[in-house]
Length: 375
Image 1 (spheres, rainbow, N blue to C red):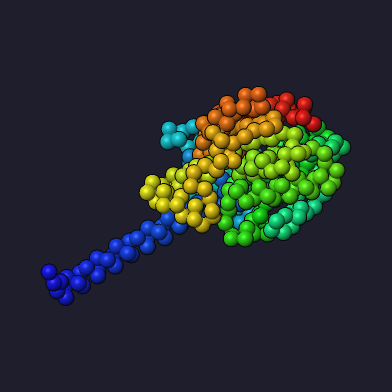
Image 2 (tube, rainbow, N blue to C red):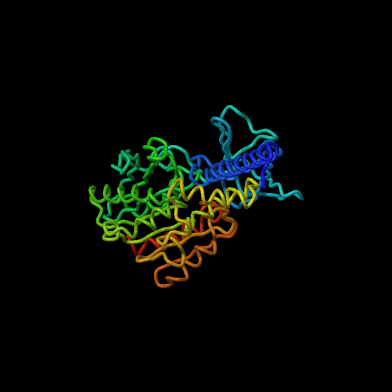
């Protein structure tokens, strides 16, 4: 059979279309993978201001009714502190009291804002009147800014933030930790403001960043720490869990606090993709792309997967029920595997990294009971 000129042209056009479609899918998958490997430091659930009046605000969005106190952020310098919902409207919008407002851009209907779990700004001294020093930790990629909160004991607490947050997240709990008179080290990681970027410019969701936490342990030991407690949120918790397997860290490790740990990186991509209405096919392509770009495992990492991760020291596991980025069941499963070591604190309505915001008194009492025998 011989193909005529028109058949060849049609075949070539079809092949080109298929090739173009394949290239478009690959490009789309790469864009979706950015949801896992390029995560901004000023994240948080996206909300919309529906109404703003003296002392109150009405917000719509998936986390508008989240229990507890939060900050709202928008524009260049807009920031407001809001309290727990006082009313939930028929359309799901939440009315919340406004405690304070900062910035030149006022709250107004239609304004897009971000819900932030960070209630404080500044540093331990300016926010909480705690004595601290600004130091640098020598990390694998270069100097990492850190806050060293002074204390008298030889057990140190080393804290690491996670997705969409900054070192300021630690200010939510730092006053309570300082009450134990333990030194605290709040460390940044590669890619944070003031820290060196990741060599490939990507977020590895703790798979490489854990070495920055190990560097912080070395810095603490050089300053007199004999034992350390690693305290992390989100990917900071993943970093702590990974670092706990390192022999040098394990030798001085007294305990772990893992708040909303990312035990399977794919939940991050899926959660962020679902928020944006990304089709499941493209989400799967994004997973494959992230595996190749950032060297992430095809499944849960053996060192963090709930069925394989090992707890070797007393561990406080905290998990919010409304966390869209972490599988609550995975955290509960990890706790159940180590009943003699794990203390599990589920928090109703807690969003990602927001368990303390949702239930501060219960959170702080559980943390107090956990830390007391360790420090």
